[in-house]
Image (tube, rainbow, N blue to C red; front, side):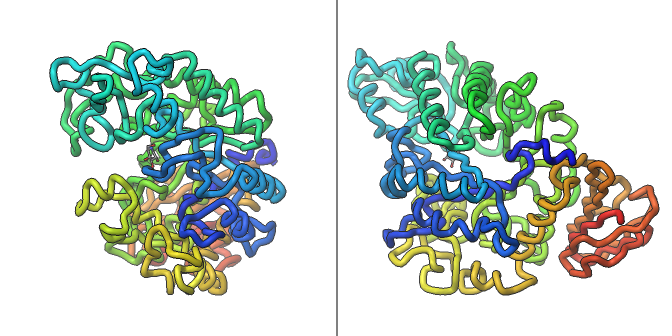
Length: 543
Ligand code: NOJ
């Protein structure tokens, strides 16, 4: 079977855990590592009653003042004490490995917290030995930053520091100063950090803002252009996706390759998907997986997803491998976002079927499998600096970071204390315990799809071919490996649709229903008369 030759990061399903929000073991209202250990059976206990995922990606667990959910690191070689100790981390690693699960660590290499001792030193004087570890420059003129570069979040990317009367560069928020990767000591230190965790046994990294590591050495201004938000009014030619950042990804790959079976997936923040593809290198020599926003930002339209997948399938290099997700800690939850204006539950099932039957590594975000909705977090409970800054605009990210809903008890079983963010109101209805016992639940649908993916090499490793000639609102494709042929039909509409037979699947033979949102598994299906019911996801196999 071809699938046997595939590495774990191609054949497995990844589950993203937002560590602060998943499970709290000590009642301080903050999720922690021990909480995760206690819940591993839910993720994978080796039987079909668990979710059956193959890897977890943990949002940053390094020491951090947590002003940005941990994406502001103050010590790369320590575990955040709010999450536990190094021993807890080692125990989690071990516990996952014993279950044959991999652990992917979030690595924030572009910037540190402004509270990191390196930055505290760096900003203390112009001649401090760590001065050059960050990007410091004089202003162009009195009160004018060195150039017009913008921070992703808002305003100039330069912050004036009165102590030394210079500006420092921050691509994201002002308390996240960018490291100066042009300094060889910085590069070496950060590679050392990666090596430190690889030595510990982590199986891979999720690399935050990997295409932001380097900026143009001459600090050239970006050309102007039209865009929706101020950040988009510039073409980001000089402040992101610089060739040196790709080179750094290659260097990280050389390091990772010294360890068996490790993988790196990088967040390529861009509006040009070609950038993301570029990070797969010029011959399997850079990232293993690279992801960008396109797929997760599409509207509920069959054609939109088909185009997104089609683009990637057409542009990936031969060694490239797709990677899809519908949710993460930065996006409004898909249950609400994609469900708006329709039957959210039915759509969530169609979306899950797509995610888990496409060619590529699927990433599930905690709570997605029980349909946690986009939550409304009141202003006074907000934690996300972006939410607080732009309130009442609904751009904050707390709504997708509320506590995992384990059961219908107080605080949804997340904590015995006061949760760091309020539990969503849906928790009485939508929780793991409740859905566990309901065969028709979203949770059991995810479980079935993951199991099916595990059983069918065509789904994990097979080729992908979009079926042409489908009616509007239907996304359909074939997955093939060896003799195994699987056809997936996704009805994005609330109407019943009949497919025009041979034009769609140009072959005869008997097909069998593997799974459908509407039941009837195992039934034979005449491919010349496929009838999709409203909001149906239907997966068939040639018998
Ligand atoms: C991208 C992360 O996904 C986001 O949560 C974070 O705020 C920024 N990078 C800055 O590290």
